[in-house]
Picture 1: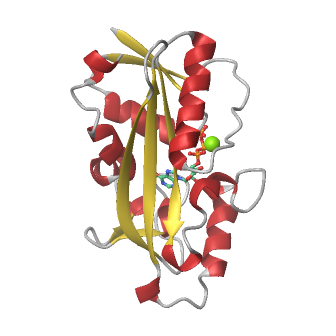
Picture 2: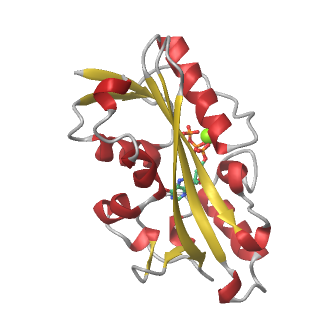
Length: 196
Ligand SMILES: O=P(O)(O)OP(=O)(O)OP(=O)(O)OC[C@H]1O[C@@H](n2cnc3c(O)ncnc32)[C@H](O)[C@@H]1O
Ligand SMILES: [Mg+2]
């Protein structure tokens, strides 16, 4: 069985990636299972940060590593929070405060101008090989208040028009069918044996 280190400490993200990798016959270990300092995300793009995280873990453990750098881009905010999504409202990383800040900033923005997208960029770093990067996107609309309690991060304020629900109102298997993360991971499907 192939093994990967999932270079993430985000429980929600790890759970989704593990669920989506089921059936690929890969043993997944995350940075929650081992001692590892936080990796500084100094890149200016999702791709740069995903590469930084995957390569840091691959080097430290001399093992194939996968990282996801993701976030929310809101058109009315010129693409913010973007790469700063995790710490938008401050250094301590609070999903609640991040959502509050976004809702506050969009307070006077009408519904037809609240378009946004979730972006997930996944990097696969294998020692001795070129790092692979793929990206997935899902479009949506920012709600006026939180709806639903599933998922993580900005899910309660991200409405998916095609499904008539926020991401946080979708059962996990439904989110995992249409999410940005799924769309990124799909690009690696059936290729894992060759990649790792
Ligand atoms: O870097 P790691 O350790 O993986 O965990 P993180 O939470 O810091 O992850 P990112 O640096 O990629 O920041 C992405 C943020 O974007 C948000 N986000 C990403 N994917 C999301 C999703 O599927 N649903 C809701 N919010 C999401 C969420 O707030 C994340 O904290
Ligand atoms: Mg991070």
